[in-house]
Each structure stands twice: as structure tokens, then as C-alpha cells.
Length: 339
Image 1 (cartoon, rainbow, N blue to C red):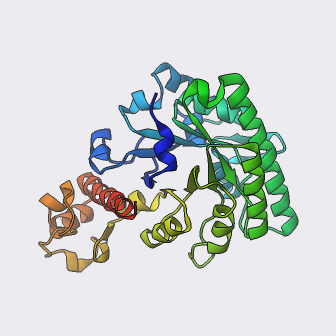
Image 2 (image 1 turned 90 degrees about the vertical axis):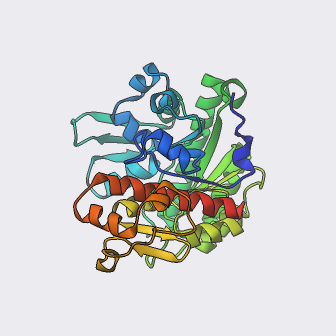
């Protein structure tokens, strides 16, 4: 079995491989960026190809040809965001969430128990408990309800993982819990302390990590990190911008993920040692320099800004691959420098 204790000791940045793939990259290309862990999503893999199919194919790692670490987000945030935006029809209730996928019209129910079952079939190394994620702008009463439901669901998830699968001792997998509490630091602290009493391998800051102005919610994040053991996984879910990762790491968080890295690459926005660069801008059209002269990735070692600009303007997918390689390489070096 893989030794996952390293996840409690080192800093990691995990690209979002939501459906079992980092968009535009092969698994080999992903490895070459220095990536050691990635995060997939329970809800999206439930809808397609389905946990039973993934299990029949030998699990997500064999399916991807990936030898690194795999997290599965429980789907709590996605359930909330998709239902809140009315992209999917459904409701969150005391037992979990029921929703209908607009793609094929099937109805699904996600409960604490089924979330664990699905993650086990997916075959991830680290599981996440189902949480009651809600909007940031909650009343105190609503935030308290969210916390209490999150705690109840965490107990149910742990019971399923321990009693039905034998827990970490039998599976070699880890189980982490999500801390809720909206914008109330005292509720965040309370939720974290209660989860510690239940006992998990890690504690994840859930919900929204930035406020309406896009700034890191420092007070809430501090309340959580001060309430959990330092020898566990401390996952700042959704963090984030390079400066936010640096700040969160100084607080004590050691795991990070965000869609920004790969999404921005696909839109021509890249991170460099000199700041953010926008390859689509007209001044890139005749710029023969690499994206970042201090980077040794495939993109920077072989191609100019002008060539990447040309490919982006003409819709060439190769540019999206190269810029994604660069952004992930930049982030992995950033994390390496903080370790």
C-alpha cells in the first residue's frame, strides 16, 4: 500500500481532474509537471461513467494510468453550486441530496453512506466526507444548521468507512472531513473542534475561501487551522492564487487545489516569475521570448510567446496543452519552494 503519511507532512498542490482527466494533458504530461497528487469529483464521476464502470476498469488510477495520489471530493460543493445556480434540478435534505442530471435525465441521490461507497468504487487514496455546503451570505441560524448537518453527516461517513470497509487499517486509505461555518469564525472553530473529536485523517476548509472582493477569508481560515492537529492533512479547498497559497501555507495549511491554474491557461493567462502574462494580448504577436525564461517546462524550452499567441488566435489546441503544462509546472515549483 502507498504510504500516505507524506500528505500530513509536506505541501502539495493538486490539479483538478474532475472527471478523471486534467483537460488537454496526457497522464505522462501531467507527471512531467512535477504533479504528485490530483483531485477528482464524486458527483461528476457518479453521473459518468459511473462508479461501477470505474470499479470494473480497475479504479480511477488504473483507468488513468496514474501512479500518484488521488483525492475524491465528496461532491458537497458541486451539489450546492449546481442546484443553487439552477443548472441542475434537485434539493438538499436531511439525508443528503437528490438531483437530476440535465444531460441524460437520470435522478441521483447522494447520501453520506453512498458518497463513501462511490469513492471506494472510484478507488481514490483519500476520501472526503459529504458536507452541507451553502452560500456565504448565511444568517447565523442557517450557518448553525449547516454546521450541525455537516457534523451528523461526518459521523455517518466515518461509520460507513470504518464499519463496512474496515477503515484505514484495512483499506490503506485516508478519510478527511470538511469544516463548514460560513463567515462566522466561531462556528468554523466549533465545527473543526467537533470533527476532531470524531477523529479524521485530515480537516478541509470547505465553502468559499474568498470574499466578495476576491480576498482570502483569513479570519475564518485561521479559526479552523488553530482548531485542528498539526500532524493531520490541512486542506484549503479551492485555494488558489499564488499569493493566497503562500499566505495559507504560512497559516499552516498544506494542501491546495484550484481550477484557476488550468482554466486560466486555456484562456491564455499564465503565471511567471515576473507576474501574470496574457498571451492573447497584441503585444505578444512579435515577442520571441519564452513565456518564462526561468522555467524549464516543455513550453518554455521550445516555444516563443509569439508562436503561442498565433496558435491561441487560431484556436489550436496545442497552445492549450503547452500553457497548461507551464502553469502547472509553475505551481509545483511554487509549492516546492514553500516546503
